Amino acid sequence: MMRYILIGILALTAFAVGLLTFEWYRGGDQAVAFGAPFELVDHNGQPITDKALQGRPTALFFGFTHCPDVCPTTLFEMEGWLEQLGEEGKDLQAFFVSVDPERDTPEVMKTYLSNFSDRVTGVTGEPEKVAAMAKAFRIYSKKVELEGGDYTMDHTASVMLLDRKGDFFGTISYEENPETAVEKLRRLIREG
Ligand code: NI
Image (tube, rainbow, N blue to C red):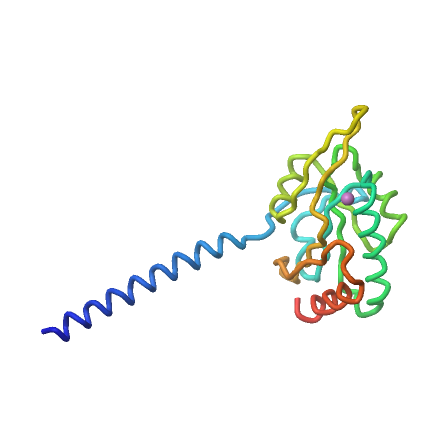
């Protein structure tokens, strides 16, 4: 009799552990959800959706053209990574998404990006849609009023790396060592 009670207790315990693990996994899965469908415009004024992030490894950077330091530095470095990768990086695509779409029209983005690279596609669009897209990629951005009525934007400075399925692969930090950055991109191209 005692044996059956023990077996019963063990079976119930196993069931409870299984259920908890399942719930934890499901919760965890929701917690790592990354990205979302979007409909925006590229720097040529053409529609661009989340489909653009699939099929090729992607470097995704959020910023704005009035940025005094972080964005110009990162875009300059990004062009350096792409040059260093050369032929190896031909499959890699790069996007610069504006967190300041009110000022960053497609024309403004196109002119701005032409100063850095012909490999980086500018993305902008309706402010609410851009904000929703940035949020889905865990990007922080906030308008900061300046004296004289002007404003600037605080924003996440990391470059997001996405695999060919459009899933999160890693990040490159602001002013990351160039060799480390290129190595991360090589790994993304190989394994992403
Ligand atoms: Ni910036």
